Image 1: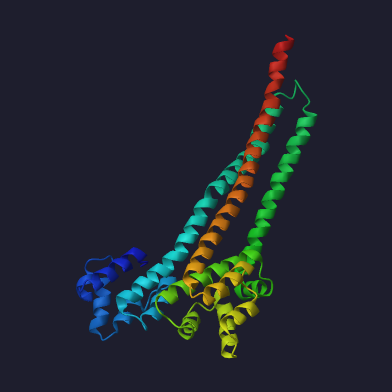
Image 2: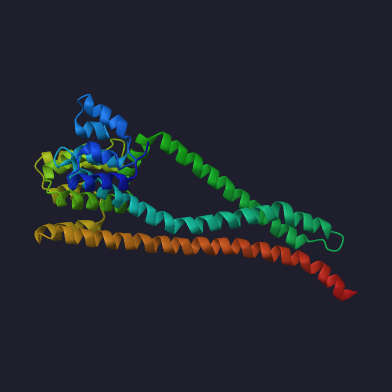
Length: 317
């Protein structure tokens, strides 16, 4: 059963108001009977609540509960999980409309060039030979088939890389492209902000990074960061050696540390990075919409050229 983050947050607020856990569970859509049974069997409170959960929230809360009171651990875990959920939701909302528009326009173009327009041309074949138009339709049809072929090829490549995740991670670590660096920098900044607000030291922070899922690019870089720190390197020097962060992040980080205002600088960096992502998505969205509208315009042009034939016949009568 997947439990929403707001349910966990509500549980933390109830506990903060002094209600016992057994009473608080009755207010929520949690598997309360299972949890109460575990408590009777001698489970720790944290184990009874989180032992069988999967996902980022449970990764966070299992660590925080070792250092903070239960309600504080839940709140911090909810905030950390929500930070990543919000960025995903924002970017998805920006990308959904243009992608749906492009897909709809492509399906319309493919359907018309393979079914409707050839039938219309055949209907008026006695009145016009449609040589030029036939060549144009064949060209558009070939482009559509090529587009489908490329999509299938891309899908197969992505499925292969996903099924061979270690290979994909090694490639990304060896050749960290700009979007990957931006993602890693943003994620690291989010973790640093949240963990510092909890009063967690750098050493405890690195222990936390060790608890993250091992088959993730971020956790692999954090493992390397931990090795560099254990060799006696300072944090900023270690970040420079990883070569997985953006130049802007590496400029902001030491300034924030030197001025004891790292939180403010990282918050500013997050806002700037999010704005940049939205700006980039907007540009891509505009190009996608232009392509989609050009598909629709091409369909209208082809149909219009065919419909001119009976009109020209009427004029000649």
